[in-house]
Length: 209
Image (cartoon, rainbow, N blue to C red; front, top):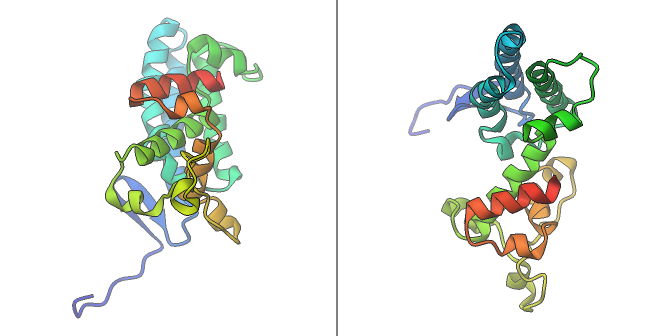
């Protein structure tokens, strides 16, 4: 570039996200896993000394930011990589509630009013799609997403749906464009028509509760 050769690397960091040459996101998730595991260890040591509400606050401060930062970008990785973070999140929740390591966590998440990692992915993708639909996303993303009505010209109930691109590979199926569009199209019409992000988030969370 500009007369200079570019060095080929297997992985590089951009805006806090580790991008590997194959876009597997494994290095980034491995990095997150280490940080979350360390923070989970802190909860383990403090759970006998602090009340549940303080432990929950520590989770929101120390762990949730790692799980949610740029999540829509790298959530398209294979299930095996995401399972690692799901396991760590459940471990943290058990520490907060001071229960045994084999305790089921569904009721624990509800009692703490916290989202499971899979639900967090769903909400983050839905919010990303909301920004697209309401012209709140960067221009690049606005250009690659289209509505059904842009293609067919019909003003129907599904005219607010995002058009799903054709794909012929598993890699493209897991792309942000496909995932965000699919998530948006499954939302009830009253949620799609929310006027603010705060209202949209609240109703979206209630829809999966």
